[in-house]
Image (cartoon, rainbow, N blue to C red):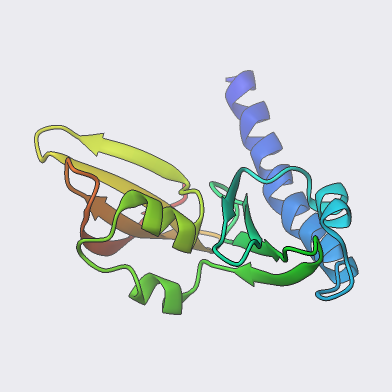
Amino acid sequence: MFKKLLAGLCSGILAAVLPACDSVNLKELKPGVSTAVEVRDRMGPPTMEWKEADGSLVWEYPRTPEGVVNYMIVIGPDSVLREVRQVLTEENFARIVPGMSREEVRRRLGKPAHELHFPLRKEHVWDWKTKSEPTLDTFFNVHFDEDGRVVKTSSNFVSKG
């Protein structure tokens, strides 16, 4: 019982502190001015890195499962910050279409909060928390077939308490 209470308390503190840290850190990072080293010093190491055709890098900074944001930070070939994007948006959700690969979805939305497998349905589902209210969490879900291709998307609500 105590461990469960302590885990819940730590989770709540982490959910409150991470966005506050991000807002401070992101305010201090300036596109066109801040360097890759400054981004890493402020945000820590990315969970994933992709190299683009133009030589720029995209660094992934997920804030799930407790948070409702995931950041993609673009570092130019000159090692200068180009852009910071919060990718858990309705516009990005609308761009997830049947046939996309897991890699394409990950690059668009960042690391999911949860990855579930339903063997009887031959389906994998990734989800991202998109809204957290005092009594309800909202999730965006992407359903993949056994080949790792998007079949559909959905949303669900989870009651807290």
